[in-house]
Image (tube, rainbow, N blue to C red; front, top):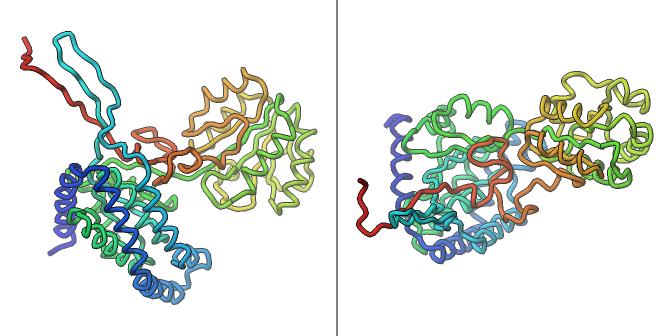
Length: 418
C-alpha cells in the first residue's frame, strides 16, 4: 500500500470514529479520560523505555540541550500528562450546548447547537506530552484526532498514543479515535493536510517554519498558532510604577514563550522619566536593549535597533525599544510589525485606552496588565490547545469551546413551506 493509500485509509477510519464519538455522553467521555489517565500511570515504565530510545537518538544526532529537554519525559512530566487528562475530564463539556434558540411565526423552533468539528489533525514538534494533551482536548469535544509528531519523538509518541487508545477502549472508546502517523516521511504531512472530506481541521503546533509549511501545503482549513511579536505601550498618562512592573513582568517572567513582550513603545513625554528606571531593571535582569535613536539618547548603552528588530520574536532576554509621539503612532507600529497575538497599553486615560483597544488588530489586547496572561488556564478556560493568531474560526487561547462548531436543529409540527 502506498503512503497516499495508507493516509486515506487512516482518514476513513477517523471519520467513522468521529461519527461514533458524536454519540458519547459527557459521563461516558469523562470515564474514558480517567481510564486513559490510569493507563498512562500504570505504563509509565513503557513510556520511559521508549522515550530513552528517542533521547539516545537525539544525543547521537547532536540535538541541542534545549531540544533534548523538551523531548525528555521525566516522572514529573508524565504526572503532568496524567493530571492534564483528569483536569480536562472535570471541565464543562461544550458539545450539545444551545448557543441560541428562537421561534418563527410559523411555529418552527430553531436551535443553534454546539457540535464536534469532526476529525482534527494535530501536527507538532519535539514535545511528546502534546500527544496526550491534544488527545484529551479533542476527545472531550468528541473529535477524532490524527496526530503527527516530529521524528525526534517517534517512539515516545507511538507508545503514548497506543496507551491512550487501549486505555480508553476499556471504558468504551471507539476504535481509531486516536491515530498516530507512524511514518517519519515528510510527505505524510502533505497527505494529511490535503485530505479534504476526511480531515476537517489541521492545527500545526511548533516553530514558524512548520506553520508556514503546513499552511502552504494545506487544502483543509488550518488554524495557525503563529509567533508572538508582543508589544507593551507606555502612554503619557501611565502610572509609572505600574508601568515598570508590567513591562518587567511581560519581558522577564518567562522570556522564551509566545506571550512575552518583544518590543516596548514609550510616549515621548514620559520617556526621560521612565526609560532610565526601566533600563536599570533590565540591566539587573540581564536584558539586552536595542533602541531607536531617541531611546539611545536617553539609554546610552542600548544597542542600535535595526528594521529587523521591530519584526523579531527573540524568545530571549533581548528587547527592542522605541519612543513614539502619541498613541496613534504606537497603534500604527503594532499593527505594522506585530503578529496579532498579544499587545498591551499602560494608561490612565480612558480615551487613550478606548482608541488602543478599538484599533489594535490582535487576538488579545490588555489595558494595564501584562501580556503574559494570554493562556487558557489564566483565562479560566482550563486546558488549551494553543493560541490562535487567526481570525476564523478561533482567535486567542483555544480551549474546548474553540474545538467545536455548530449546527442548526429545527423543531417542527408538520410545517411545509408555501
